[in-house]
Image 1 (cartoon, rainbow, N blue to C red):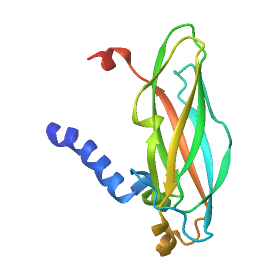
Image 2: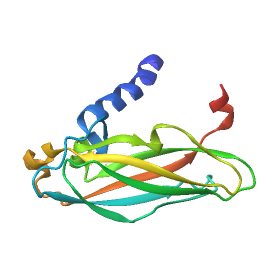
Image 3: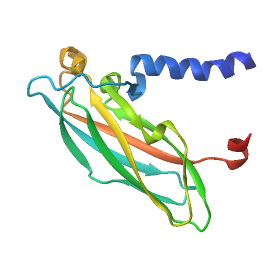
Image 4: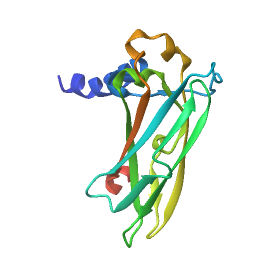
Length: 161
């Protein structure tokens, strides 16, 4: 039972990534290119766990993009403490039915981020919205997608092992 419990987390994560369940985004390499004049608004939401002494925000709160076109957004994070701190970002997309169509090519959330005392880092995410969203009846009313990130501290003892 213990083994099943440990195995269920990565299996659930793989299932969510494959289906977009719970707003899980996809990973991709190349955007297909804009299709027609269809656009969608992307809102950016940022959060920081209480134990992480960072300020984290998007450079712009929202963008309107062409569906299928590659886009880039920037976020800034500042370490407000007097020592180096490592954080990792989790993410999701709402509404949940848009998750399987929101594809990230590159993201700061794929790796841990370490900031020196007082350091500010500018972090990009490169993404696109898959044109298949246009043919999904469950996503027909999606006009705005919210990409949300939450940064959490990384336990340095666990990270070193």
